[in-house]
Image 1: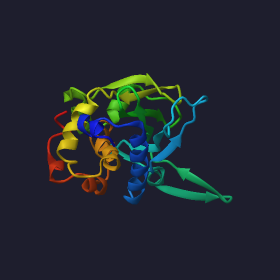
Image 2: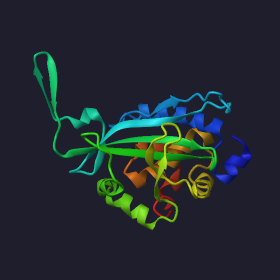
Image 3: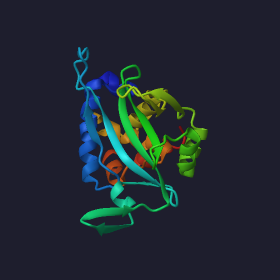
Length: 229
């Protein structure tokens, strides 16, 4: 990554690809209870863009109403019953909503952007009020108090469907502070996305495994950069 990007807290499209592949590998090695992030490549015809264009996807994440936690499908089911060689899965009533998360590079802001989509178990999309009811208190507090973090309803750049997103306004500013503090001396592209997600993920209840953040942050990781945004 060039010195200018390091200085201003932004990320080039090529470095986003490097950081995305790194996040996929790190997330898988962390053995989290959530599904793995995967890279979804995208080819434009005509291409127009020479970089490795695509986005990160984390899908089929289920919300547990009783504990306000996000879990994978393998943790969703409480019991199975085999009938005529077919498996019948009983879904616990506490699980009512499912979420998909995409991390997409913004060529305008030169930063990653978190898009998300929620739906009920019957496939009906969730309204913002439904989503906010699912969020833990610390996420609601962050959204209420942050001058940067707010949710908008936008067209997904690749799927061309309406998705919610955390607006990237101000990302470069607080990432610049994070880079100058907690990320000082660490390889930049590989750690950028993990560090970014550890902050923005709080707004939607998506926690980054501590084993990932500990490899990116030094003692400054306990600073107030996240809650004070």
